Image (cartoon, rainbow, N blue to C red):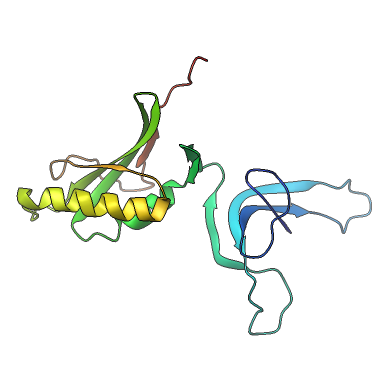
Length: 170
């Protein structure tokens, strides 16, 4: 296994994040193939308590490169936004839209509150969620509270993410 930088494709050291790549070196008749897993991992610098010397990853798989979006130069994973949104007990459902506003990329997170939340508390929820997302992602996020029950509910695999940016013509 090898961990390659998401930006440069060069190997990274312990404590850094990158894409997990496997290279098969054991087959004599097989040409050397590199298998890109598209899993983003962070190499652990801590020794295993069981004294094994195999590579280990801090927190397991932290994301996928095919889910990764670059917004204003910052790499953002929708799963990270979900982790933050789920910390708010007043949020029943949410939806993430990446869009362009006045030529700048913007993340809009719509929050569907629990029905018992009063309208007076909506602004506080939006501000708290916006602050928590800015801290977790490192960029400003627009949050908006919608009417309770507005956002769709999902029985199986949820579709809570949409990228509606268009390419810039220059």
